[in-house]
Amino acid sequence: MAAVNSFSRITPEIEKLSQNCMEARIDPELYTQLNVNRGLRDINGKGVLTGLTEISEIVSSKMVDGVSVPCEGELYYRGINVIDLVNGFTNDNRFGFEETTYLLLFGKLPNKTELADFEKILSGYRNLPKNFVRDVIMKKPSDDLMNNLARAILNLYAYDSNANDLSIPNVLRQSLELIALFPMLAVYSYRAKSYYIDKGSFFIHHPLPGKSTAENILHMLRPDNKYTQLEASTLDTALVLHAEHGGGNNSTFTTHVVTSSGTDTYASVVAALSSLKGPKHGGANIMVVKMMNEIKKNVSDWKDDEEISKYLQKILHKEAFDKAGVIYGMGHAVYSISDPRAIIFKKYVEELSAEKHRSNEYNFYTRVEKLSAELIAKERRIYKGVSANIDFYSGFVYSMLDLPMELYTPLFAISRITGWSAHRIEELTSGGRIIRPAYKCVQDRVPYIDIKSR
Picture (cartoon, rainbow, N blue to C red):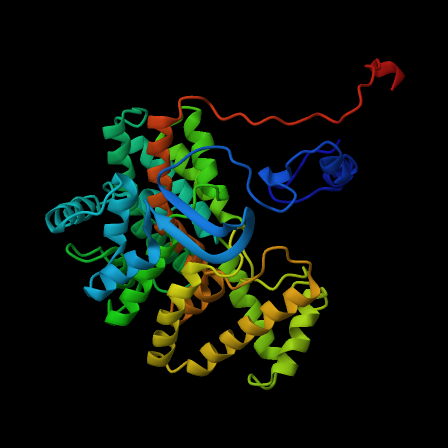
């Protein structure tokens, strides 16, 4: 075999060898025949129970006369309905992400003094090690910010003299530091990428003490540091709604699996981050934005339901957009009739679109949402109903906030590190056994053949 002469090039030899991998594909029918829950889901798509948690709960169906029927979606953080949580801090004209972080980590809502003290702790941790930006973030940035973020987190391990200590006080300290530092790591990684790869300007703004996470993200990202109250409140609510989701989502389950092995906090977080990076998980809002941009180009009248429906049918029939047959942002693995996060968020989307003079675009989104639900229900066999999920609107919101698309998934991570941290601590205190699911081998047994006879 010829030597591989390029780090990134797929050689003819590799192309040929890859055919062996393709030929080894497992027959999908075997999953049904052998009663294997593919992807840890039953035949109806419902997740197989693999653990217990007190952190959050998703409700998508209720028992009526002994039969499970779909219902309006509900989401609870530590037993508190997320709708009540959001209404609580918005009615007081407060930011809620820090309060939500406290709730998820410690199992109760903080009083004023506890919240103020907690915010001071987070503010005190918003300091990267000396020369970290220069030596880690600015050296060899890639165009993928999630990979840059993962590299930065793994480098933080080297600065922690107690990196491998799994005691709860130490893991909590590490978790709070990462929650505080994630916005800086993400924004600074974007700035490095913007300068070295996109040939743009380079500047670093330090976070401000006394400001919320949402405010500091906008402050650090924008050249003039300016933002409106509605912009900050909308971003804050987005962080709250993405902070945690039921424990069974891919990245959180990854957190439990990796934590159960006894590894350190930094490795655990990077494993979860790697899961979130996947377009089937954290990158869905980017696909929604790209899809909507494509629809806008091909639909001349944004108010013509018939014209919109025809193009949506093309998407469903794999004739348009990415030809995957998916209307992104519609439907959810668990929710059926509605995603409560999308319902909460929609109010902010409407207000922000008015402030940004993009109400026509908002109305177009709502029309696509309605028509997509009708089309999918008509053309696909949906056993539990279909509705817009939060990804349908979050990308639109981020675009109105002038956030670069490269930061959409890192923003998800900035929020979800809260949930990951809570689940890591829960696994350390309540787990105890390494998580090891079983895989059934379906390869026939064959004899070994001597190399001379092959």
